[in-house]
Image (tube, rainbow, N blue to C red; front, side, top):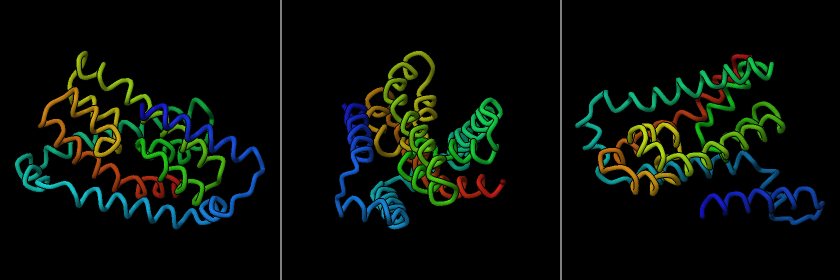
Length: 200
């Protein structure tokens, strides 16, 4: 159902953009992308703060808990390098796009701000597709591979939008790791994007 809402929202946005109709409220939002970015970061802070008991669970796992987010970041980075080579685009652009780690709203706004709107749109679509494919793949991965691969496909979204699906198809331990992974990936997204674009 959430995938359907995402597609509908995207299509409605595209139709609005192409229509030439002017709504003051929507124009204010599009002209103040920095403000939107700060609101998104504030929302992530609230989401992290609301996770009760996560600190005690993290202490149980020690440094092992960082293996999954580090693996996701490295895998995404390598994917960006490979796509850059295939598409013959600067590696900094390719890695910046994949550094969104599925957080399409932040990736789109940040890359549009730091690079250009075209690249921001590609980042938005790429990371939106990552989240959408996660909804489709998580049930399959949980049965065919293992629970940790469900977290890997979700990346930054494993603490929020894809968490209910991970909760349904995995176990309590995976859910704790999933929340922690989402927190780390979400915190790393703006740092990784700006670092990759500075490579240019």
